[in-house]
Image 1: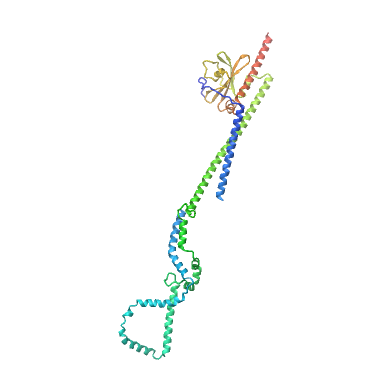
Image 2: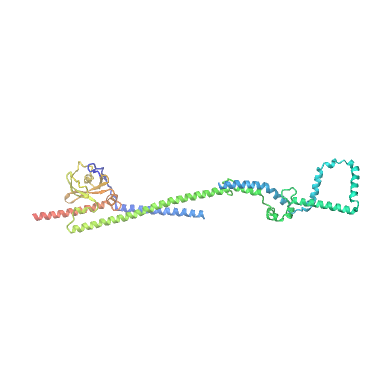
Length: 56
Length: 373
């Protein structure tokens, strides 16, 4: 691996995030996924019910 | 395709049948229950009369010759039938005439019982061919509202291509096709939704795995902290023990230079950094940052350095640099991504350990100075 110590890349400043934000971000992501799964489950159930009605 | 074939075949069949059978059926219905025997007995006579109208030779007979032919015929008859009495001759003539006429009547009745003959009469047919009538034709005669033409019209309507007429097969086929298409689309949609559902569930599972990994990382960190605390209490803690997050390099600021104190888990190619010349280094910029924020750069592809300044005892200023590979998920999570713990807390922990180390070194130095004094 080529050493690039003599040619360092541009330096960036890392922005800090509070612990509360980390927890909140995780919680929102989890809730979003659960909500999507729940909504999709309802749609799937509705489609299956329609198919069942059509095939009776 | 099948519907069109059926439509074509049945149309042609019914079209032929209605012309062939409807007149017969209608005639049977009109004759049903009407007397026929009189017609049968009168039929030959009418036929004979009809023949007579057309026999021109009668007119051609020279009635003037009758006086010549008459005596001849009378003489011939007197010679042959002369011995018979007049009554016997008359009765015999009548009997023969009746017999001949009866044979004609029987022949005429046979014609009346034949479908398609002009003399046909359904009651004669019923009388002479009862089994055939009851098995086949009685069904049509008794159902007054049925004709093949009506059936043809109904089939024509049913098989018509009018998609808006609910009674047509085309409508039913179009409706069934639309239902089939709808079901097909719904099934495809279901498959897509199930795949998306699976992807979301996998994603949720990934979140759980990430949480487990985060907990495992933090547990490792706590174990290493405990280990270092014990080493400190036992008097053997030093900067080499500070690699519990990643490899590192440590600098002390001296004027416009960052002097290397030590490094671990790096290439070891360390040198003093000039604060004015080496401005492309994260360590230099971090040393200048009044807020003590972390600075990141990539010394080479796949490698990253995060540097931050630490205010130390005795007014000293140190710069700590974490060195790690970009595929080191634990390091990225703890130091850069902020998805397990606030990265600033990791830096504070390192700072605290450095202060502990520096303080212990200062204490040892003071003790040594006291001993030499």
